[in-house]
Length: 176
Image (cartoon, rainbow, N blue to C red):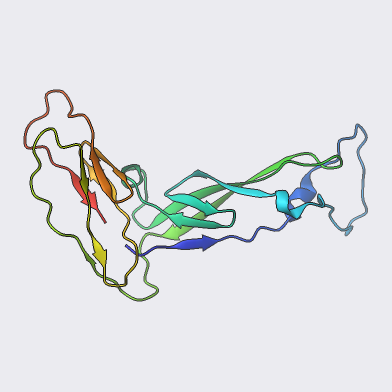
């Protein structure tokens, strides 16, 4: 799975829709420039929902989890963001929600192959297992648990409590 980073550049134009903290309406002539709070560094873009995580103030990476598979369209993934500004003495705080759709299939860039060594059957009582998949592009490999009583922490598969009345053998599927 190749790593996809999204860079977002958000302007302050959406803050023009907020009105100053006054009791009287202030009307501007048609065509007047829209004002905004002076501090452009105060805008924060954050994740609301979707298969991605925030890496830095302007960089996000797509990360798939088990929940993504059950609530997704096979052609696109929906990312939902919130752009927030705390406001200042002249402008009210503002929150603007944004949706972004990305294709489920990445057809751009170089093809890569991931080698995922077979994992032998594990005995009851094993708490974790290090995963050793490699990419021929020398990119970091990310994992998620598709099914089974386990979760991922980096490149470690952590086995969770076995459900009551589980039938053995218990299948755990890991996707790289």
